[in-house]
Length: 369
Ligand code: UD1
Ligand code: UDP
Image 1 (cartoon, rainbow, N blue to C red):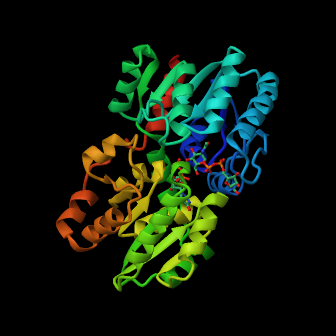
Image 2 (tube, rainbow, N blue to C red):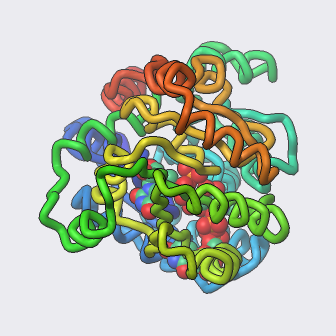
């Protein structure tokens, strides 16, 4: 039996690892254990509850507003004890967080094989997304098995000289999670009821999220100015579940609290959030995962970033980069509200991120490895 350790720490990693965790736990050839660094706490626990995942190890590492260096050093120290205790033959990490890169480094130091889920995404700009572009490059250099969501991301790795036999195109597990999640939404939940009370179904609903470090400060202020301007239209409403990062909370509540067309709420449980996405007309976000989910729900996405590693979504037309320039955000939102052809073009594009069977494919590759 092969010992496999799955490690994650933030909300999006948990959502995207959940379908794989479920499949691995059902595979008798594997002894699978789950370790959470808990780089996020509340936002991680919401996801663990929904997918009924009980970690075997919980490092409980979140501290309010800790620096990346504090977090990194604590992950390296704490994960080492888990590696010593469980002695995995394979460690699976996800994407581009501090958890992924530091756990991959610790596993490498102990000579343990590493599998990287959602491998190969690149902007090749180390300042955007910061620090994620470098996190995923570090993890990519250390990994022995690379599970890429698309052909384009596989090509990035090939161009970097990664052995082609170690690269596997599987689709993104975010779609597996979304399809499973949509089947399990309980519309009688309190948070959904509260949102239903706010929504005026005669108006167009725009959902907002944002958390990128490179947007902190001036860029977030400009984004908030744009949102206020959009919300001043009589035909729109905005709902904004605000990320718990204090750098986000401070600006957003200060700038947007007084606009009665904007509902500011704490981060929603995944279940309630995907329900909300489904009610929306379109989304304004800097999130990576939402760029991948929205096309399956036929929702256009305006991305408040200068570059994206989700280039397939831009090519297909479901995602448009608008940066954080106020005029550009407002003008594109108006275009989506007023130009039906433009809206339909974005809404009806194909989702390039897979068919919802990525977790099973990854399991089979590990079985045959
Ligand atoms: C992290 C990831 C980012 C990912 C994002 C998803 C890194 C460097 N960044 O960014 O790649 O896209 O998560 O959301 O790994 N906080 C809470 N409760 C929570 C979560 C966060 O209070 O449940 C607050 C804490 O003050 C914490 C701060 O947010 O210190 C920042 O959290 P951190 O994980 O360092 O970075 P994110 O900005 O969330
Ligand atoms: N999400 C959620 N609740 C929210 C906002 C987002 O559950 O209030 C989900 C969303 O569906 C997606 C993921 O969180 O799957 C994206 O997380 P985030 O934007 O924090 O990180 P990123 O994808 O940018 O790494």
